[in-house]
Amino acid sequence: MLSANYSLPRRLLKIAAVAIVYYFAARTGLLLQLGHTNSTPVWPPSGIAFAALILLGFEIWPGIMLGAFIANVVVFEVNKVAGTPTILFMSLCISIGNSLEAIIGYYLLKRLKSFEVLGVARDFAMFFIAVLIMCLASSIVGATTLLLNNIITMPEYSSVWFTWWTGDVSGIIILTPIILSWWNPRKREWNTTAIIQVAGLFILLTLYLLALFGNWSPLGINKTRIFFIFLIISLCVFCMSQRQISLVILGISLSAIYATYLGIGPFIEDSVNGSYIALQAFLCVVSVTAMFLSTTLNERRKTEEQLKEVNAKLEVKVTERTQSIERQKEELTEMNSRLLEKTRELERINKESRSFAHAVSHDLREPLRTITSYLQLIEDRYKDKLDNDADIFIDFAVEGAKRMNTLIDDMLIYSRIEHSNDSQVDVDLNDIIVLVKNNLQTTIQQNNAEIIIDTVLPAITAEHYQMVQLFQNLVENAIKYRGERTPVIRISAKKQADEWLISISDNGIGISKEHFDRVFIIFQRLHGWDQYEGTGIGLAICKRIIERHGGQIWVESTEGNGATFYFTIKG
Image 1 (cartoon, rainbow, N blue to C red):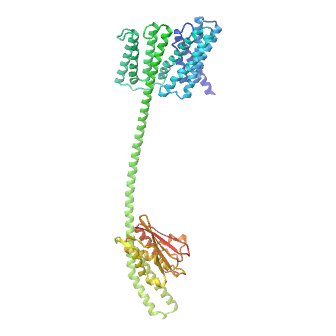
Image 2 (spheres, rainbow, N blue to C red):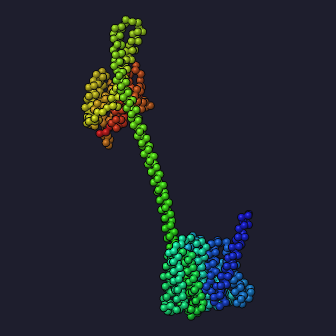
């Protein structure tokens, strides 16, 4: 409520101010009216009214109507053109036309979204088109009102209407851009060169106007001298702000109007009205040309400034991004350095642990061999000479020593793979299978095992010893976990891109799915010693061999229906 009460006085103040300014501008324009018609070729209030609506908003339109009404009443009363009731009616109709003119223009710009009249060239073009249309309202209403009230005759109607229309158009075209440019001017940085340029152009313009309207220059009375004004305007557009250009337009307009009023200059025609119409046409062209060029140039400058601002922001962002990348690069370098250090430390620890395991395994073999030998000697000498418990204890000790010896042997094999420095050579896997069959000949014969090569195996580049160990472990496992059926082992190979996929399948007891990964972990056993012999290191050795050759190994199986081991290796 307080806000509404506060805004109402401000609104009334704006309306009163517009009404007062409009009234005095109208009285000035009506000094040049045609007879006692209140129709004038020079009508500044139209430009003031339109600028007021653009700058202050639609709410001030009553000020336009009030100012126009009072001005028309006063002038009609002074001229005694009719009785008071008729004067009041005609003034009301004319003021409605004047208000309607500004309102139509306002809504045209709103519809066209073109309120940046001096900021965007398109908006200025729309402004010019809107002016030509909106002024029809005031001129038609005004001329028709005068005709209906017998102030003018029908033969005079077209002349009065056209004079009214040109006066309103020229008033808006000339004054509205001037008011807009001074209402919210752009700041300009001055320097000595700019001051000299502006001062020089104003002096040149003054001399030209004196020559144009004073008839003292070598230009003579030839009307082509008028067109030199456009050269001066072009220079002004490139060197002046819109405020200064508005002063140029105002100076040209006042000089031209005053000279024509005195009856001198290039716009003098057979009639006063014709002279003023020619004058207003000239001033409209000058104003439109100057402001349109200035608006276009300002839009270009604004675009360049925005582009510079965007480029500056982009440069800042690029700089920030570059600095961020540099920081990230430094952090990454530092992290890589730390990672390399950790990797070296880990490699050292792994090497030491492997060396330790190898040394321990190697060093354990000799005393374990001695222990095993003496246990076997005790078993041979004292078997059945002691009590039953002693025989059982001796059997356990001998069996444990044998298992420990087997475990150490397997650990040495695993350690040998880790420390292998053998060079890789061309290896024919078919020859490897022959060696494996020879190594496992006794096991194969005892189990009646059958090894079938489904496809010709490839020749690859690998460490020969490790390939023998790989296939021997897989084939031996297939025979060991045979189940009830006679072991059948099938070996095949398939080319895949730049590597080979090798498969070794059997018809043994198979492996449960939940143990697929576990079987490749060192020392992991799925069965007890009383069921199947072994240390649980064979498949771990296979996995390590394949990884050292850049491949992968996995198993697919259904428990009770055999297993298939797959591995990839470079061809």
